[in-house]
Image (cartoon, rainbow, N blue to C red; front, side):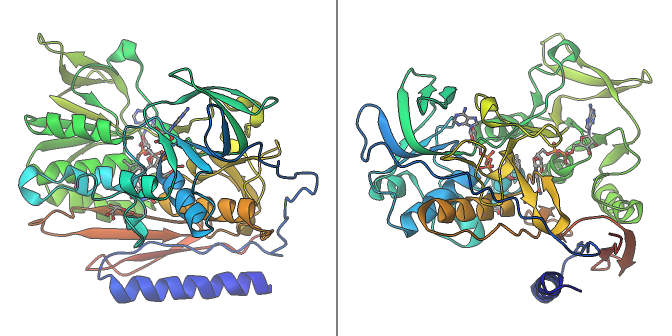
Length: 443
Ligand SMILES: Cc1cc2nc3c(=O)[nH]c(=O)nc-3n(C[C@H](O)[C@H](O)[C@H](O)COP(=O)(O)OP(=O)(O)OC[C@H]3O[C@@H](n4cnc5c(N)ncnc54)[C@H](O)[C@@H]3O)c2cc1C
Ligand SMILES: NC(=O)c1ccc[n+]([C@@H]2O[C@H](COP(=O)([O-])OP(=O)(O)OC[C@H]3O[C@@H](n4cnc5c(N)ncnc54)[C@H](O)[C@@H]3O)[C@@H](O)[C@H]2O)c1
Ligand SMILES: O=C1O[C@H]([C@@H](O)CO)C(O)=C1O
């Protein structure tokens, strides 16, 4: 075992201890070891940072600009403040009307029924999700950070180092961090993907619209058996709604769970009244006489009634208008090196949108989970502001929490570390815990 692998194994062991000591809940995690262990660092000495054009905010010039006001942006802003480099120097250009918040809350606490203390802003602005300070709009003002709200970047010119926003502002940047995240994949409009009562969840506005539908809903159909599907279906149980999950695969969380693990979770959902329709594709969503969604019609012709439909069929990285910076053809997203530098000097990408070298598995990856959003943001800003040249060496970590609302018969929190490759070994019977280890020593 190389020393790097030994270090990772120690990290895993420590993570395992934490997991079992403070959670009495099921845990899922994996360690994948690549034989030989030689990792390739993709550092390019030709990439240098541009020197900022101007300090302070005048009509056009900004020293540091972050595009996207999401999870990663909030953690990046914190790192700028920690280095005393925010005041009068940092500008965040955001599409949303509120400062960065912990997006995971939207399908968890945010969807608790009204009588079960749902989470609402400003309660979950970054960086509270990792135990940090709650960065409200006042925090940004106090720290001299300019935030342009509801004014997405619509055009980019790398040669002149300028951005144009939807309101027509032209911003010249010294250094640029792209943190535009992902957007929800949608069902085509021609099959009912835009009908009233059909929901997608990516931001607070989406979650508000869903909460409003849930208030008068009776029959809920959830399309997709992934993260959103599992979390929203569990939330709908808290509202005592007739809930059906429909997905094309054989079991829930097909990309992550083993069939055995999925079975345990499916049973838990069934005990809460959730129905499953597996191996099914949607032909179309039907509308009632009021124009709202009234059914999901499956490819085999069967019809499932619904007054509220939540679609969770995956997400796509938001690379526009930055395609020219370099999109990875395999995993999508803006390609960066292990310091989050793109192919264009002075331009960085972090969070969901970044295609980065996942050093321990020696491949380029995108990770669409919050721990990476937080850590990539920190690592990138450290690189930008200090002489750090340490390669990002990330141990993938993600989690979910379901049935958390007060009065639920069982709250479940699962966690996953590493990669789910190799032979799966399951320990425990979900009463109350289960752990799955994926063991892969192939090189
Ligand atoms: C509902 C939901 C629940 C989740 N739950 C979990 C969880 O439990 N655990 C977990 O590990 N991960 C979870 N995730 C994933 C996690 O939230 C993301 O990985 C994280 O938000 C990524 O951070 P980001 O900053 O890269 O992207 P985002 O947080 O999506 O931020 C991107 C921001 O950029 C803005 N933007 C896009 N284009 C432009 C533009 N042109 N100009 C200006 N702004 C722009 C967007 O409006 C958005 O505000 C969840 C995601 C969702 C949607
Ligand atoms: N706990 C978490 O980490 C968490 C929670 C919520 C959301 N998210 C993030 O939000 C994003 C969206 O999550 P998601 O659950 O939509 O994506 P996902 O990729 O986890 O799941 C998509 C699911 O949709 C189904 N599907 C795909 N195409 C379909 C189609 N045409 N018709 C019907 N079903 C189809 C499949 O069952 C698949 O499992 C991802 O980036 C995810 O990482 C993460
Ligand atoms: O990471 C997270 O942040 C929020 C919440 O903890 C903020 O208070 C949430 O629900 C997560 O899963």
